[in-house]
Image (tube, rainbow, N blue to C red):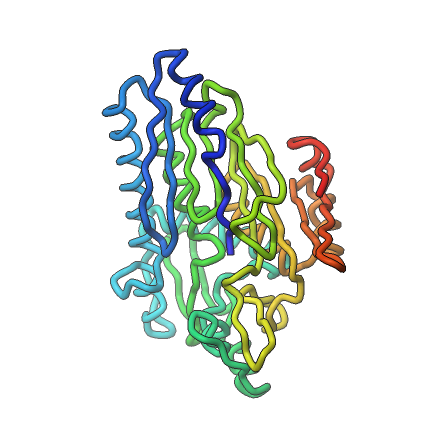
Length: 331
């Protein structure tokens, strides 16, 4: 889950600053990729701003058409139906996306691996949730993982080696935001896609003010940061977890074990590229604070963990790169 960020808390201030420079502060809301999207831009006129945001929405919708597993007509759905052993040709845009997906799967040691459609189905994560038997879990794990998809970037082909299916939930929003940035340029603009935030430039009032939600209450801001470039992605449980037999089950799975991730806080990652931030927030959630912080520190990744404690307390632990970008964090 990417908890909803409170993006327009400083809307009055930025709009006033825009007026001082003769710019319009233009916003649009939409529902796509199964979530609410909020878009904002500074533009010379309202019409120009609406045109810019319309371009961004077109890009987001086109990305959804490629990646959505809820749409039978999408490219990823077609790949998931492709007969085993028969190469499937990806579009140029999807080929570039897959190159990043395979790269981050390898870099994270498999903590990020979106080829877990069979595993999610075994636990009915997109439904009311069930607890599969050990045998069912073993079969789902055996039919999961990018190792079962042969990707050739030279020919842009993917070949299913088994009845494996891809789920874009851990990278789709980030990919859509990167594609929107390519169409919009350096801004100043902001897009919140279901809680993952990307910006193009700081805007007339300086950095955009973004709230990081409380891990247990996605509508309750916990920390506030200023964002002037790149993307912030948060992974957590909140209401998207499911309850099975009275036990809360995380909707984020560890692809390495086939089990729900044990961590019950949240992870926020900043990266210059949105797909990377999206994939890494998932991977670092799976790793948990101890393994994840060590991994992030060794690679200069900007990450913040919010770790629930006793009696409703919350501990914020950030990597050096995150503190350098956003300052010291205090709960």
